[in-house]
Figure: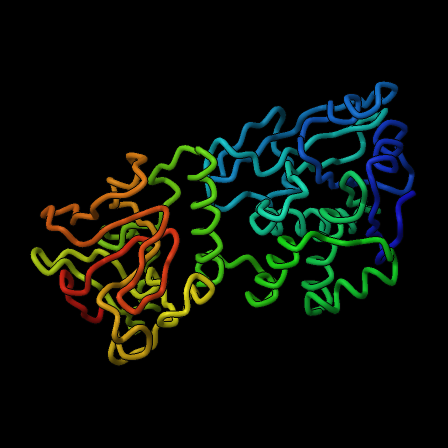
Length: 364
């Protein structure tokens, strides 16, 4: 039985969802499914007497590519995905379900595991809930109605009511006291809070998270290619003229190859860390103006940056290797998916290391 959380927003488990999807509903118009598989066959595999009529609308992948089975419904324009990991990874599928194909179901492939990537699914989930509740009731469900669905509804409460992660969890427990998101989801919801209730791909917190996900993917045997790396700062970007004029006065630090002067990184690519405190102090921080080395890791002999598209050696799949300037082939540093110890004693994993002696710093 779905449990009321807020006006037109309910939480539930697979039993309640199966009943609504199979029989239809006068109250519910939208169902958000968070299960280990996005396929509607998950329900019949779970219980053989469940048969759900469905019609595919589209499948959207995490790089934003889409496969549509019918004209795209402009009610969901805002749900186009943003780039994160790989075109082979499904972000969500959208389908019409029920006896008369009037229910809209969004299916998110998500396992209830601490290392699972919840953060990259939050925007589309919250957009779906927000749009759905304007047309009728929305059911958010997972298998047991305890962890995955709870995590998404907590994010919804955080954004819609500007609540902290802790306050949103406590508020949800007043409606459904059995909810208990896993620790990994709670940690990601804390990141969501620190990013002001949005998944900001330019935020240092998100970039740290993305690097961790990338490292986990490498060790799970996933193919690593440069399409999922940060933009090459040495390649000119075609910009909107209005935006370009607006940003003319905005300056950032650039890190150039000492030999050929090509830009190999900018301020936003750099990982700051606290000297000698080990992996736990691996944090993303925005560098301030002034001495580029004084504010953070001034005694360190290297910079650590996010993987960038010019790092062709990384794409080849080796555990470790040299980082060389893509223009003049001068040695710049080293990468190692298992990590590198900085001269300050801190161990950074995974590591994309640029030696300060091989670069110059200037304002861009």
